[in-house]
Image (cartoon, rainbow, N blue to C red; front, side):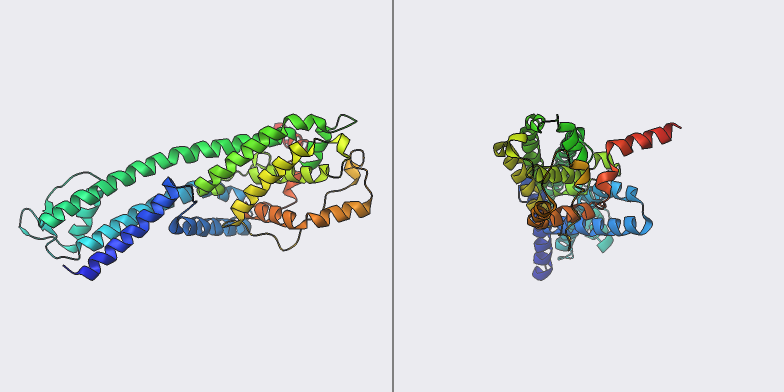
Length: 345
C-alpha cells in the first residue's frame, strides 16, 4: 500500500465530510466548498442577468446552487474513497478472474458501494479492505440521508421567507405607501400592531439564513414579492418615522427592536454575500410625504447623512439580488394595478 496516496485520499475525504457537516448539521453557516460554490454560481448568474437584462435567470439560482453543492459533496466523497482504494493494487479483486481490478473498475466499485447498491462482480482484496468497504458504505448511506433531510428544512425556510416578504408587502409596496396607508390624519400608531410580529419573523429568517445560507440565492423576478425590495422599503419607512414627532409614531420600544432585527440580518449577509455600495442612494422625496413629515430640508438632509452607511448596505443588498434602487418604487400598488389593467386589455 502507498501510504502517501492513502492518506491523501483520507485528507480529501475529511475535507468534504467536514464541509457537509458544517453546512447541514451545524449553525455555523456554509462550509468552505459550499460557500465558494454558491458565491461563484450566483456571480455568474448575476453577470448573465445584467448582460441580457433578464432577471428570470436568477430564479434558477437557489435550485442550481443547491443541486451543485449536493453533486460536489457526492463527487468529492467518491473521489476521496477512490484515491484511498487505488493506494493498493490488490485492494479490489475481480471475482471471475481473481485478478486485481482495473482503475476504472475501482471507480465503479467505489461508486456502487457508496450508493449502497451492494457488491457485484468485484470484492475487497483482503480483510483490511473488507472493513474499509463496510465503513465507506456507511458513509454513502449517511450522505444520502443527510442530503435528503437537508432539503426539507431549506424548503420550509424559503416558504417562511416568502411569508415574511408578503407580510411586509401588505403594509405597502413602497416607502410612501407604507406610511400613507398607516397615516390616519393624526398619527402612524396603526403600525404598532404589525411591528412586533415582523421583528420576530425577521429574527427567525436571520437564524434560518445562518443555518441554510443557500436561502440567499432563492430569487423571484416579481417585484411585489421580492424579499430584498420589501425589506428595504420597510427599513426606509422606519428611518422616516424617526422624523415624525414621538406622539405621532409607534414608541421606541416597538421601533428599535425591529431596526435591530434588520441590522442583525444585514450583518449576517454582509459577512459573506453582500458588499455595501460605494455611494448611498438618494433620499425619498419630501413632497409626497409633506402631510406626515414636516421637518425642513436641513433636518431632512442631516437625518439621511446619519443613515448613509446603513443605506449603502441596503443598496448593496438590492444589487446582489439583481435589483436597483429605482425598483423600490416600481413595486408600488398603483403601478401593480396598472400592469394588471394592461394585461387584461
